[in-house]
Amino acid sequence: MSFSTWAESAGRLIDVASGRSPADMVITNGRWVNVHSGEIIAGTDIAIADGRFAYVGPSARHAIGADTQVIDAGGRYLVPGLCDAHMHVESGMVTVTEFARAVIPHGTTSMFIDPHEIANVLGLAGVRLMHDEALGLPVNVFVQMPSCVPSAPGLEHAGATLGPADVREAMGWPGIIGLGEVMNFPGVAAKDATMLGEIAATMAGGKVVGGHYASPDLGLPFHAYVAGGPSDDHEGTRVEDAIARVRQGMRAMLRLGSAWYDVATQIKAVTEHGLDPRNFILCTDDCHSGTLVNEGHMNRVVRHAIAQGLRPITAIQMATLNSAQHFGLERELGSITPGRRADVIVTSDLAALPIEMVIGRGVVLAEGGRLTADIPAHVYPDFAKNTVRLRRALTATDFDVAAPQGANAVTARVIGVVENQAPTKALTRELPVEGGVVAMDIGADVCQIALVERHRALGTVTNGFVSGFGYDGACAVASTVAHDSHHMIVVGTSKADMALAANRLAEIGGGVVVFKDGKELAMVELAIAGLMSQERAEIVAAKAEAMVEAMRACGCSLNNAYMQHSLLALVVIPELRISDIGIIDVTKFERVELLV
Image 1: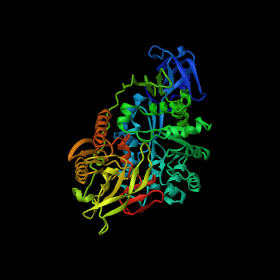
Image 2: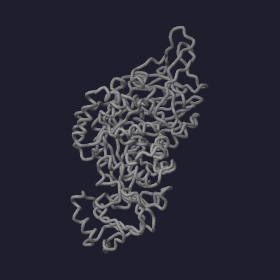
Image 3: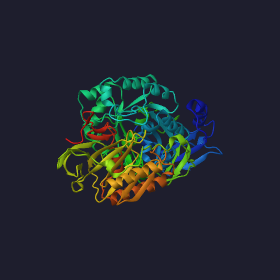
Image 4: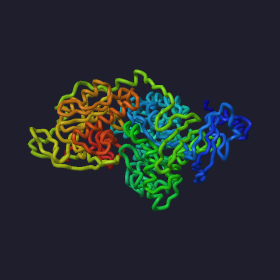
C-alpha cells in the first residue's frame, strides 16, 4: 500500500468514503477510541486508502472490494497510534531505524526527536544523517533542530557549534518540525543574540520552539523565558511546575523515561487541581534500549499515567491528539478520523493497554508484540565513526586531585545523584588526604568522577567527586555518552580501573564499559559518534542489560544508574555538574573550585 499526501489522495478518500471505490484495508467490529469527543464508540468500522483513513463509522461494507484486506477487531478497542512528543533517539544507544523497530510493537507510530546528542559530536552533518534516515521509515519521525550546541556556551566545549544560520538552513528540510529544547534558559532571559536568533528563525518558518526550563525558580526568570518564545517544557518535576507552564500558555510535557519519573507528581495538576488536560502531553525524553525492548515505550507511559488516576481516554489524548495539535499536525495524525495517516493500535484493554496489533500508514507493522514489517538496517558513513580522540593513553595518576600543601583533609564539592530525577544535589564532604592527593571515601559513598576531553585530543582531564552510586570494591564505569557535549565520563572507586576503562573506549571508538578489579565485566560498543550502536536493537538491549548487571555487581542499586551516569556532565540542569572546564554550579551558571 502506498502512502500519499492528503492532496494526492483526497479524491480516492472521497470515493472510498462514499462507496464509489474499494478501500485497501477495512477494520471491522471495533470500539473506536475517539480522542476528539472523548467517547468510546462500539460497532465501528474503519476504511483505509493510500495509507490514510477514508471512513470511520458504522459498517464499512460499502468500502470492501475483492482485493480489500479485512481485519476483524473482534470488539477490541481501536486506539490512535501513540506519539512521543519529546525524545532523544541516541539515548536508546541505537540508530533511528533500530529505535523504530524497537518501539513499533509497543504502539508508537509518531516520534518527535531532538538529535542534539549527535549534533554535539558531528554538528549539522550529524543532524542531517538522522533526519534523512528518519524520512525512509514506515512510521512518522519528525526532527527538531538542536538549539543549544553546546548547551551552555562558556561552561563547556562540544565537538561542534551550531547557530542561527544553521537553524535557518534546517528549517527548509522536509522532516524538520521545529527547534529542539532551548536549554540555555539563562541566555534567553538575558536576550542572548544566538538564542533569540535561533528562535526567530524557527518562528519565521512557522514552526514550534521546544522548551527546557530546568530551574525551580518560577519567578521573573521563568516569566522572561516564556516571553522568549518556547512553547512547551518537559523539565518540570513538581505539580507547581506543570501548573505554572500551562497557565503561561505552554504545554506541560510530563516524562517517564528510563530514569526520569516526573508524571506522578505533575499529573496532580489535572487529577487534583482540575486543570484542562488538553495542554498536557506525555513523553519519554530518554529511554535506553533495555527499557524499550523489555518494558515498552509510550504504552508504558500511558499505563503509568492511568495508574496515577487519569481516565484512560484522557491519558491516550495526552499521547496522541494533544501532541499532534501542539506541533500543528492535527490534520495529519493523532486521531482515527478521515484524512489522517492510518496509524492504529488494536487492544483488548484500555487500562492495561496490551498492544495486540499495530498499523502504521495503513500497513500492519506488528502483531502480538512482535515486529512483522521488514525494516532494513541503516548504514552510517565512515565520517560518523572513530570520533574518540585521546592525546595519549591515560594512567591512574591522571585522576589525581592535588591537595593544598600540608593538608591532612579537605572539604570538597561533591555531585549528589538523585535517583529517578535529572537534577543533582550540590553537596560538600570532608575527604582525607593521602600522599598529597585527595582520597575518596568509599565508606561514605564518595567516589571519583572525571570528564575526559575526547573531541580534539587536547589531553585534558577534569576531576571531581560524586555520591549516590553506592559502588564498593575496585571498579569503574566509563561512557562516551555524556550529555550534552559528549566527552568521556568516568566514575570509579579505583583510578587504575578508571584508566583501563577510558583507554578501552578509545580503542573501540566509543561506548560504555564496566571494569571491576582490573577486569572488563561488560561492554556496549557505540561506534556511531560514540553514541549509537551499529547492531540491532535487541542485541544492544542484551548488552545494555549486561552492563546494568555489571554496575550492580559493583555495588550500585540505583534504578537505571547508567542514565544517571550519562547526565552528570549536563551543565544546564541544577545543581552541580562536571564539564571539560571544571566543576559547574548550575544554580549560578559559573565554574567553581572543587575544593572549598
